[in-house]
Amino acid sequence: MLFHSSLRKELSRSFTATLVVLVTIVMTMMLIRTLGLASRGSVNPSEVLLVMTYTVLGYLPVILSLSLFVAIVSTLSRMYRDSEMVIWFTSGRGLGNFVKPLFRFAWPVLALIAGLALVGWPWANSQTQGMRDQYQRRSDIDRVTPGQFQESPGRNRVFFIDKDTADGSTASNVFISSIERNLQITTTARSGQVETLGNERYLMLRDGQRLEVPLGAADLKISEFSTYGARMGGASAATAEDTPARVRTTLSLLAEPTPAAQAELAWRLGMLLAAINFVLLALTISSVNPRVGRSGNLLFALFAFIVYYNLLNLGQSWIAAGLYGAAGFMLALHGGALLIGIAWLAKRHNNWGGWLRRRPAPAKA
Image (cartoon, rainbow, N blue to C red; front, side):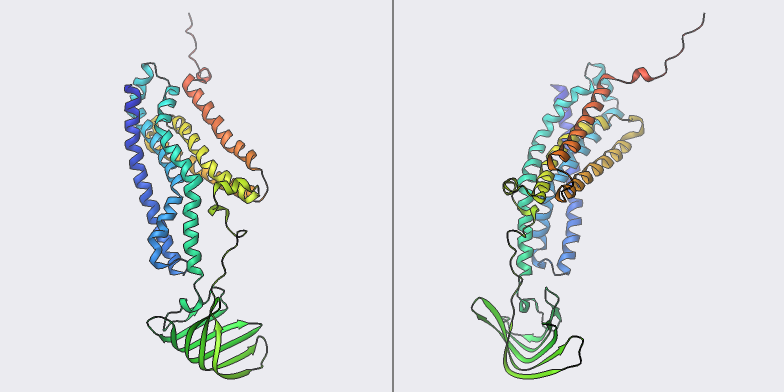
């Protein structure tokens, strides 16, 4: 039908343009954020683009929802402005007749949002978390750059070496300052070499001196050594209990009814439910007041999206804290938004409320 095909064609153009713009903006923001993490030593500088790609992939459900919402609002607002909606209304098409073609256009996007929210989001987060953990588990000696002071992850040890060999296993003029057992320990050595003893890596120092000063005391202990071993272990791997809910699969969240798991599951399912509600809300928002132009409707649409998305994130924190149940919150938020959209659409479709307008008084004889 001409009605369905023309509407879907214009929605496709608007959705594609909006998606490209939003993805470009998000990629730029994520690149700046990832570069900041790399400068602080949280991300491997050689993996900045990979981390940025996984991050953007994780946020695609939000980008797709906003793109779909803006595309529908902008398209229908343009039709109102150019009086195309008046033509369809006079031909017997009410506002409710737009629901079917809108959902026929939106269902592939909704299916993609569901797949990304339930599968892509945890997978992208697990990949990013894995790269960050692997980079953080580097041993202390791997973090050292010749000629620079370097702090360990626990911030209780500072390293300095003058220079090292090409393979990084041997260093000269080693300086180590650490706090251990309530002692300020300063160790210097002429040379050091990395050796593996069992499952641990050690920096074997040679021809050096060790100073121990108790914290808050004036005592000093000086010792010299010909060989001394300092463990260079990295950060321990995270256990299953320490795994964040955002990196866990949806099936594992369903199998564990903890508040944190239920909160994450409610957020993932909420992304799909919110996208469905956005289709109905976009249909009603676009016809709020066509005289203000497209910009007014778009601003109102962005405001509605921000409020809805913030309520979704706020509800996730409430569920994780045990203040509300997942089912009750989802029913209140998404069910309430659905009822508002249906009631608003029914009012516009049936022109309810017209009787509230003041009618002209009958002429006197």
